[in-house]
Length: 404
Image (cartoon, rainbow, N blue to C red; front, side, top):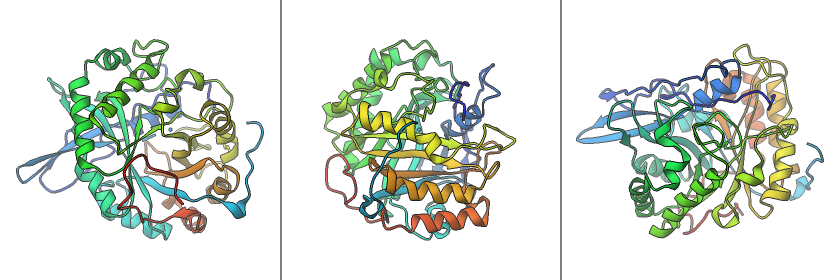
């Protein structure tokens, strides 16, 4: 992938029509692509990872659901025989059952059937608010999806974005200065208190891929200024700390940058006291006609940024691949999967979690089920005992530790 080209990941708002029940009324948010960014495939992926929402009436209760897609030099070394345990899982889209996980946990069962192993963590997305109508409607802590995941024995992984839907790059009401200045403190405090009340440990990936320029929380877009990303992160973190939400594990997740062309990671890192895990996102777009970027191996994509984060930016922190995937076009996806799942435990010792992006987005063929070969390669690779099954319904209090 060419890191120099603009990346606009505004994430599809309703990642296809999510249907929770016959009584669901879909409030669909449209992803807006900025002029000048349309040719970049990561625009579509950002669109696809854009957060969307639906409201579903269930009896007298109103459930709000958010959706979303799209987080070289010296090689890392480690002894494959001494591979450390890895939480594994996916973002699981609606293509398997018609409704995405974790609102439909049968989608998780279908994915696990393909992988022939139960997942230990599940990712889903939620923005701050839905501003399709005025006034904006702010999303509460997603207790039901969280509990669905935990009851399955898996660890919830919430990707939470300081934006509104419909999702677009210019959101003057959701600038980093608004977060830093306290505009959303009442909402943030309420969200943090509800997280504390739920009480169970979960990963919180806040404002990911901040080193790019395709989300409204990146510096240099949407009126955001240098230094404001770290200030906003610390402000939000401090509110959670103040209410005692110690069950939150904070994940700081940039996008892979093989050519060192994006924003400096050092300038965007909030500090060890504000981060529990680091993360990385990256995709092999191949030559898929929807977004042809060329074929790149797992190592070509991840090695350089992994080295920067694990050696310089945050050497004491464990890492999770929050999003990764490959196309079928331009090479062998099955071989790409096999190599990636073998290399992660053997060559990247800081990586203690890996989440496949198993959802179709604007013509991109990310799911493992795009071919029998890819499905089989994924099942074979994840069979490695380093990849942990779902045995985490009752994690101890405090930040999540790497699996043992």
